[in-house]
Image 1 (cartoon, helix red, strand yellow):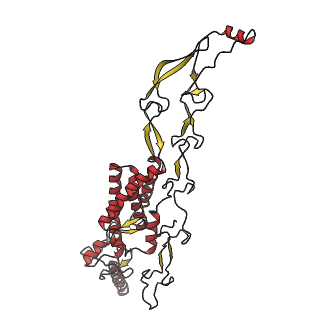
Image 2: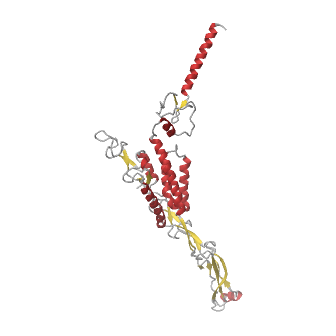
Image 3: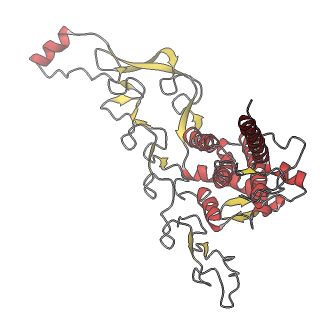
Length: 400
């Protein structure tokens, strides 16, 4: 081996050792932002997050590592974001447990208040803490409750809960006399033998149930010392750690619905009292049976006398061809659906949009006129320097 070749190999060896040194110095990755940091640094040069120095400093952190773990190892306090996420998660879990309790011990509609509050908390916390599926599942649960819990069972007015009714027919004799007889006992055609029928609840009935749930949830949060933003309830630890936009979103997602339909977009039809059926008014229909017509009157010789002589038989009442013996037909006011579109909200379930804030829930701060500072150059005390405040007309909900 020549001297020239030996020197070249030596240079390559030194260069390789230097590259490996640089690589070893840079493979430590920040658990918060993902940037590479030096092994000898206790803080990330990109985001400033504290870094725990351990014997396995070169190992990449796993995807589930918590920032507060690194902060505790480095002897530092948690950031505001960490505190917010932890408190929101606890409040979310508590709301879900409360909703389950209300649904089990009372009416399912009473669980709407904590469910809506939980959805608002999840939406404000963002997808980084709550997957989109969590918010979507909550929305689906609320929609299902709206669809399945707005009706109630009442005693069937046709059979009075007996499930069966006596079938009566009228027999008309040759001389025109009418006799009513009971031929058999059949299953009630109105309730199909259930003894009960389903009826859409009136706005007054819905209001009583919903207010009971809201009252219980309100009292629970007052006893816990939570803070109220519109109709939303949050722990006191979050009040100073969320901005004005998050507060407005909380208020908007928990806003009170239309006062006429209570958020359902429909009301019980008054024409049929929410049953979807009305009494059959077909000519001659009495309780689903049509009485036979009287025989022709004999006034002398002619066609009438011939007709009576040709058919001197008894005639029985028959089921009505219109209602098929049920004595009821679909209500024309609601087409048999038992409910009609709310005239106040036009089916949206919510009040009109606030005209002052244009449904944004926030407006320019009156004191600082949106600058965020007062006349002395200090942070505005009314808006905490944000230049915005919740709309006082709608309370931040965006609805009148």
